Length: 418
Image 1 (spheres, rainbow, N blue to C red):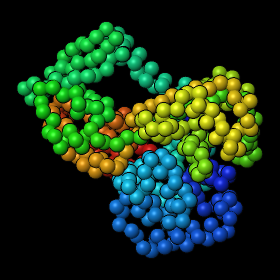
Image 2 (image 1 turned 60 degrees about the vertical axis):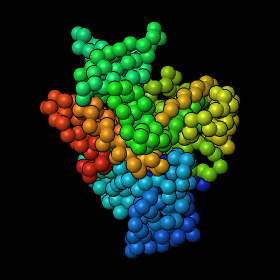
Image 3 (image 1 turned 135 degrees about the vertical axis):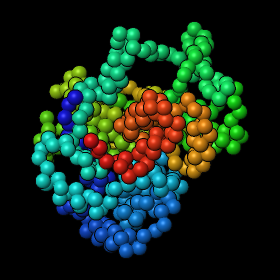
Image 4 (image 1 turned 90 degrees about the vertical axis):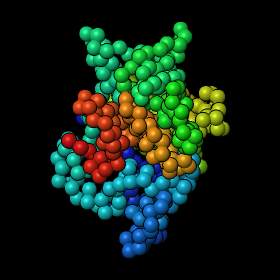
């Protein structure tokens, strides 16, 4: 594992802002006096008069004030989710950034000055504010490769690849077997327990031997999701340079993630893989490996673009906002589409409990992970749901509420736990 420094910034007005945004000298200079005064007045108003938190819009305005909400949250949230923040539930904010506010930012600035470089003890730090983290040398996939090797070592277990679940068979109060589609046809596999990380929307369509109540089926199959496209671009250099702190190799930008909040491009976020780990790039000294992230819906105009057209659009957007000089600096590219990457918090989501209550009445079924719980969990919380499910099975617990409570109770809210 590598100890990495987390640096994420917002790119807005063709300038870099701290992420999360802070009221420091650079922010004031970037915004200008007029915007800064409006933001300060808006924040003071929000502290004196709180709105009922019926939506994500209310959640953000209560913590940052309307002017900052309009600048940094409204448009970007709509870019990510495809709907206005007034449509999204406030519980998304409570789950992802519950402790994040101007007050928390100021407190973090004071604490940060006392912390020694390389100190990863950040128990009381909001995750959005964490500065140092441990990262696998060859990326997150290395975690799962290592886990797979451990599972299969000494025949402890078997991992079946190219097996797509198409049926869950219920009999006499329990799931007795599942059916998987393979390149060689369908196979039936007996089971004692089922731990499901598949989308809830798909899960309810697989049952046989038990009737899913019509209302439960309707809510589950209409749950909303946001799909995701990443364009990978290998370049020899960037137009933008870094001349501040911390010093970087070749004066390259130090960011792991950049949140692109310009209104005239569709890219939502930019990753610089060199800064996650230099081992992710074969020729680190001469190349920069970028990931351009786009949020969309399956079969919409973005999703249906050809690979060539999408990559061309992505390169053009980097040139347009001044991050890349021109397309001649692109040495290679690729594109990856991911369905149901983000469970969304609108529409039938508000009735999700009807679905989870029904699923929980099946004793040997455990819903885990981001899509398994239809919850926008980070990787660590997703892993915790699986660990908690295993603990329930081991200890013979029948109440599954502790599994669902991960990342909903205060101790799980966006904090680094030890």
